[in-house]
Length: 444
Image 1 (cartoon, rainbow, N blue to C red):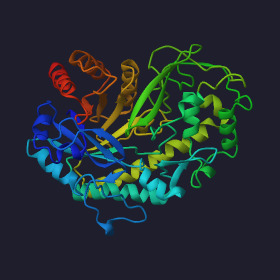
Image 2: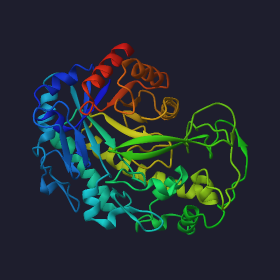
Image 3: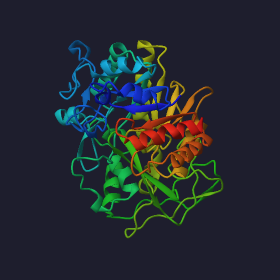
Image 4: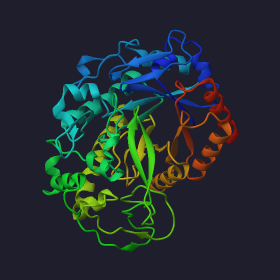
């Protein structure tokens, strides 16, 4: 099954939209039911070309009795039942409709409830990031899933940001790049020290994170050892920095030269290219050098801190899957997932797999070889019958070229992808939609 991603406003008010999407050759549409703020191009809509979405919103009618402390906002730029209107129009042309559900990424609720957001080791809040360590956040996510399944009656449920968000985020006039923080720094700044999280870590964790960010003393020693390719890698050659942009993960590769790496296939997977061979852990960082990985920065605290981070996502995911199975037992569940245990963002950490889901989808917005390695890891973590999806970028900086896109689809299929999730059919130009349709035709 191939899936095209769209927003409700791409469909509502545009009678030509359903047939245009059906013409792509996809079987299903991922329709946003709960989505964060954005500024979106609408190149096909009869009424506008740019739509400003100033706050996160819920695109189904809000039933007050269904919510507790946290209540999602109603949009003013679409009808309050925009999801239902779009769903019916898409199903009328034979497309399945899956509810694209963004969970912990919500700046509206985070700003109004600062006690429930992620805070880094310095106490700085991330208002866009609801921390799932709080019971109120867990209940909000559960009610969100239950309402979408009950009122929206989708053909499938897609869970995004099913865990804590982190440092990476494209805010209004983002001004963080000049600090020259490394991917390891980004991981460290993604660790949450809110009131519900801080006491879960070993006592020295906060001080060690702050020292690593500020380079105030050498990071703890990590013994240089060589392991087999099936062991845990601690210093990848190709380090993938992940940050959330428009609700989805973007990647930028940073290269180090003193180590060789391979992603693990199970357990505590790390970032990098999955290759065969040996894995060498780099020497200890000194005050004049940056730690190459979060493991080097945390040293002997690594295992405990990593377990805390993974447990946050595991607990939320298990509760949501239980709610979904109780509410709509036959509705397939898709997870946006990342085998990297330090992942923070739209693609939540899933280093040990999730047999309760029907589809595991990996981000494929970066270097195709690195993306393929991530797919291999998810495939290795999957259970019999579980499908693997590739979240494929069809927008810039990708070219509007069917041949290039088809080649990427073949790469991802060889890595284990059995379906393609195409981002984004509402934002793509006519040339890009044509490239998507042709690439899918060539692949099939």
